[in-house]
Image 1 (cartoon, rainbow, N blue to C red):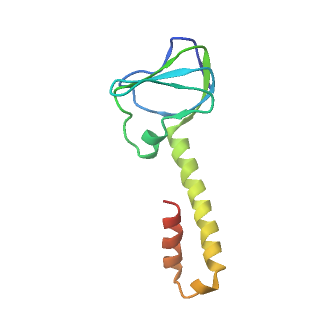
Image 2: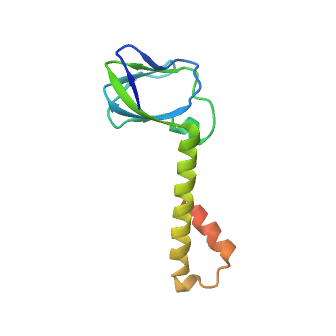
Image 3: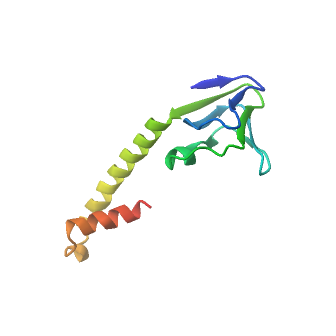
Length: 121
């Protein structure tokens, strides 16, 4: 949980993205040199794509608190670990569903696993 005062930078242009942020309170301006600016408010998120695909955040983006604000932040490792474990649990649920469909009785286990993975995409 991080709190910032009005005018303070959460992320400066060129910083590496290390957290998945969820805005808890206040307003944050997302400044993108290539596009229009937008305001993030309670419930808005930022940083997930960079962490999910393990790529650096666009160097032209910065986040500036427009007013006193607080965000929940999850570091990249915890973010990816959570998504991976949730996907694995979901995969197991889908395999159980496929096992319950008589029409699919002829599928080999590896084929059921492949079908379950495709449903996660």
